[in-house]
Length: 125
Image (tube, rainbow, N blue to C red; front, top):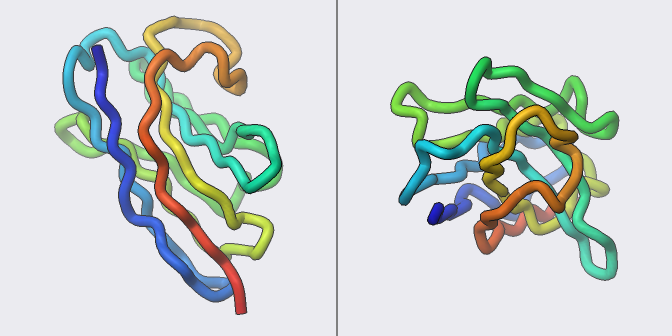
């Protein structure tokens, strides 16, 4: 099994930056991808960004492309989501998910077998 814990959320003003962290533990050798998703009240969980474990490829949703960056630390046990120029529409609970599959559509919620509890990001004046 895999355990995921998110951190780094907070309340900021528009234009600010935040770094979210997803700490992984357990049987992480089986992970092929770690993705970031977000969910606002009354809305479905939506894809934000993903990094693949085999080759480090990164993919982003159109709404965050150019503003967010996904990366991992040297020990490959933590995945970061660097967010800059935050907008009110970025307000949501941000969750990280781990997938043990390979070569699938990483935008789909259903391929992620493990999830953290999420960290709140609030962007307002």
